[in-house]
Length: 377
Ligand code: PMP
Image (cartoon, rainbow, N blue to C red; front, side, top):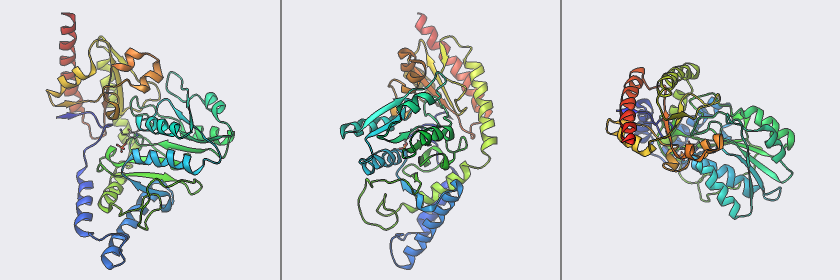
């Protein structure tokens, strides 16, 4: 099998699974219980949270564990809007967000919020001047993805933060960092809120993180009992949290080295596939090397994906959460509907080997040329 859909999800790594199993077996108590088993679990929960807070240089109280980035994005957008309605009803997002952000925006519109979509240039960079003009006294929140999930565009969050705060210091800044963490450096201090998900970094599915600094006012979306966290009541999923902490520690090690390795693999794929007739690269100078987006001029993306699957080669369409639909990001980049309807996404990880890429390229060219040939007849 050759798996090249790491941006959709990653397999759980062995060490992470070990942490999960150990926490499950040895820490059965509810961290909210008063007895010694509960206290033992609470101690482990505190230490996993502390490890994560130290990785990002933030306070433990600024971290909330969620079920994944979708939930974190909801907390960020809906939670901020509901808590700050008196200050305004306007929020700004980019045109390169994950579909979950757009779905939340649709909901927010139904309850009276106004959404503006900031423009970007052809390379995907947020248009700073447009952003500046869009910010007004009623603006309460700006949300910009750190790394776009479809074409891998990385945004300069620190610069964007400066623009926002200069224009209106009351505006909160959120970033969905799900595709950035473990691939490229991220800094929570560039933003007021951030969303992460463990299953993109060889952690388990069903656990994510919502960061918010202590200045942000959020309305809890979930109500219940449990003392651990006001935004996420209930029994904390201790084994998932411990496993997430392990996955993060591994993911953040040797980032430069891992990124350079992935860059070489990306360049190899680009140099070979860009010579094929009917393939257009949707990659800009701001794309991270882990995500390689292509449009097919003559073959339907699903036809190619299923043909490769016959050889146990797995690649994705634009984003796993919007498979088979128009790629909003490619549309935002090139304003070309045909190009945006025919995208495939090859996503690479530092665990990908050069041998896998060589074999992938051989199969890809073979399958692609056969399908292309069929179109001629
Ligand atoms: N945001 C981004 C940028 C993503 O890539 C994804 C996963 N495709 C999500 C949010 C949703 O994450 P989760 O599956 O953890 O809810």
